[in-house]
Length: 104
Image (cartoon, rainbow, N blue to C red; front, top):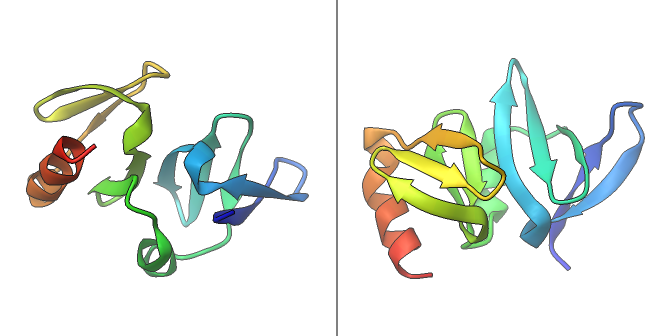
């Protein structure tokens, strides 16, 4: 099973499967991961993560990666997730997002 090793709020490592990731967001100098079951921090840089992301995880702006399986609706330029969170798709990432969202 593909995934990432993350750290919880007590700096204890736990496994986050990629299909359970809802969002990955850059907060300061660390990545915060929101998963179905747990939230934590990813000790990786963006370049490392983008190189190993599966097709269902897509970068929508310079700070955010979302799981297309958790998109409720797309209202240009915003994406509404099933969690109720709203994220903006940047102009630079819009074409790639539309293509990948359409291929679901």
